[in-house]
Amino acid sequence: MQPFFQEELDKLRKRLTKMFVLVTVQLENSSQSVSNSDFETNDLAMKNENRIDKLDIKIDKLCQRIFALAQPVATDLRFIMSSLRIANEIEQIGDIAFDVIGRAETVRPFQETLSEYAIEGIFADVINLSRQATEAYTNNNSDLAKDIILGCKKNEESCKTVFNEVIAKMTEKSQVILIATDLILIIRDLERITNHLENIADSIVFIAEGKRLRHSGVSPS
Amino acid sequence: MKDIKVNVKELSIFYGDNQALKKITMDISDKKVTAFIGPSGCGKSTFLRTLNRMNDLIDNVRVEGEVLIDDVNIYQKNIDVVNLRKKVGMIFQKSNPFAKSIYENIAYGPKINGINDKNKLDEIVETSLKQAAIWDEVKDRLNNSALDLSGGQQQRICIARTLAVNPDIILMDEPASALDPISTAKIEELIHELKKFYTIIIVTHNMQQAARTSDVTAFFYLGELIEMDKTRSIFTNPSKKQTEDYISGRFG
Image (cartoon, rainbow over all chains, first blue to last red; front, top):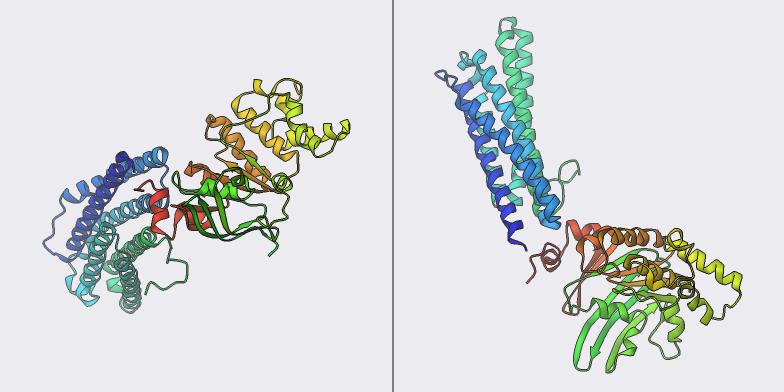
């Protein structure tokens, strides 16, 4: 194998791992923005968002260069294709997490309501799934990726349940409509993030095993 | 099975004491392109030459096992080797047209097979050159020497010469390795067209060429068939680590 090619693959892995780390920090920020009543908006979130976007573009260019110059095949091909997809998924998670921080201001004063629906727990699960995805990608661990897919499905169910509960509350008590609307949006955001994490895990399985689990009807277990 | 053109069973080839092929078993599909890949000395060209008994020309060769083409073992005693080589044509790495006119190059095979009618020969020459996608380039100079043509054109003349004797199978031993990218693209395009009518087996060191042109790829290493599968599977998700290492350049 040409050293140039290996160096480019290493560079790709390193850059994507960096994106994983940044987006996990961004998810922690968004969690704090909702559950910490003392949270103050700072420019760290904005900086993170910019760095994630820049890395996404850099990865795009890097993959384009590798495809053009090295014509990768087999595992290398799957690794590069999937890294490109994963970078895109992370970029979208970053955008959603940033939106959550923007929305958090309305719901932050209502910590009691947030505890009632265990929002902090859902955030914690999402952050944990993101950490696991980082590990699965870095170590090419498809078993862990399959666990993540199962974890994501569980989390999506939790989001749906909370969503329905909040809707029921809104019908029951019109005074909560204002905070509940933002809460619903945050729950939807968490569901979307989970969905992106599931896509990422599916790509990690694809790198290692050459098969896609999503939409194939195959259970990850 | 009707769609299997070549059926190889437990084929071993020995050059003196040296075993070049080790119990190869494979089926080659009719009217498909099958590519043989592997490092130099892995036995792929030896295997290719086995399919039209070109190895008979080498001293000290011993063949064990069976090669069935259309269910007939080509290594049985009463096989007419000349007829076999007519049925199984071959294109080599270096184009080797005769030092004759373009017309004579193509008409040569049919003539030695007893066709002497001028109109019939004209028809064969035109059809073969058209099939080899070179008719438009040479139709006005059929009496010029084939050696005056470019390397890529000469290779297509050789393909036309092979087609003129109406083969079933075409063996290609690195047919484009000495050609520039444009001539290579023409040969690859031609392979794609020809597979509608012929079974094509190609040996190549160019991974991208194998990936582009073939339906099935067989990977050889040290005289053994390591893996044979649909080309799209071999190049996206091979099942053997040795194949993976070879096609991704990590070999050795």
